[in-house]
Image (cartoon, rainbow, N blue to C red; front, side, top):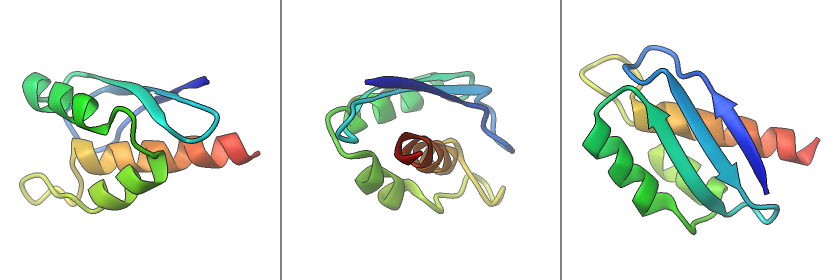
Length: 87
């Protein structure tokens, strides 16, 4: 298992911390900043799922016309982590 840190851009959350198992399963995710209850719910919903599946689901989610959201930034974080894991 590896821990990844990601600094989101254009959203209220300041940091996403993810633990991803060697097989690509999301073990844990935590957001600093942002909408606390909603982001905790995302963490609970994605736990145990494959990172690639969740990235596909959340990619493109928009928050108030920003062109991104914390969920969309999480998809970017997962894709970056998956790329790092393949290297």
